[in-house]
Amino acid sequence: MTEPPITRVEDAGLVPAGGPARLSLSRLPRAGEIADAAAAARGVSVWVDGRLVVTAVPSRLVDAAGRVGGRELADLVGASVDPAVAAWLRPAPDLPLPGLDPLPTSQRPVVMGIVNVTPDSFSDGGVGYDPNDHPGAAIRHARALLKAGADLLDVGGESTRPGAAPVGTDEELRRVLPVVEELAGEGAVVSVDTTKARVAREAVAAGAAIVNDVSAGTYDEELLPTVADLGATYVLMHLRGTPQTMQQEASYDDVVGEVFDFLADRLDALERIGVPRERVAVDPGIGFAKTADHNLVLLRRLREFTSLGRPLLVGTSRKSFLGRVTGVDDPAARQIGSVTTAALAVAAGARIVRVHDVAETRQAVALAHATATAGDEA
Image (cartoon, rainbow, N blue to C red; front, top):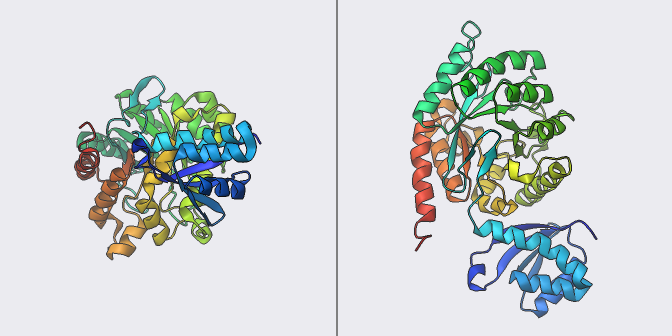
């Protein structure tokens, strides 16, 4: 009995006044007995897709675990429940960056501008990449995003759209390194969007502060040890399969619970290899191995992911599910849907939004954040 259960907070709004929280617990030892003991203390429990969903005052749930299994079980449950509830209730922490000021994610939403150094990205292929003017086109595009108000830039040399062909390491490096080096040299905060250890290492050496990895370290077994060795900040994203296969794997009994548990387990795994969770942001992977309905459910229930205790990054910009909902087929014409979903994400607790339309998004998320936090200091 050494591994804590995973606690996802569905609602803890009444906890500061001594009221109950609604908690979903996975991997809970003696769950049925704890549910019975919690019911005796005026708690309510139901099973949902193999997870115990408990509505109870958190301290009473921990006490119930103690009545079932003594101090050891109480401590185990408390080590999961207490930090999850605390994280749900408070603002996200700032995200540290090696050698730079941290991203102020505890204070406001941060806008990440997308710099696709690719000819085949689904939304803007070729805008930031001209083989006859490289890296000039990408650098001009990135500077325009900074002028529009981007807080940081995410530079990627391999498309991850559904069905995209893989790019070799040498070609990816040829695309991204001169862009990273120039932008970092100009003082920009740069993230490198890659799944490859060698690209991550050389991009960080060129000035990148963040490794944004859509694969959660599953494509290249050396990537996560490399991130640990570099001391880089890391974006952990949920994905199943590869760009060629991921939409065939968009099957879930409980998309929120399964994505959350994946991220929680990977955060623990990262800590074990030397990447402390303080250096990690989490991304539920909207659009990756998800149907349109899965994406909408995740967007509606994003607040639950704040109980992981890490800044939440969300990328909805120009994605196909927006087209399915709005009937807009051209990705470049999905600006309204992109800006709306970025604002919804921030209102639900996201602290980093990855976008193409920086100026419009910055206005929208500033308003969403101001509305969501209005009266908090009263």
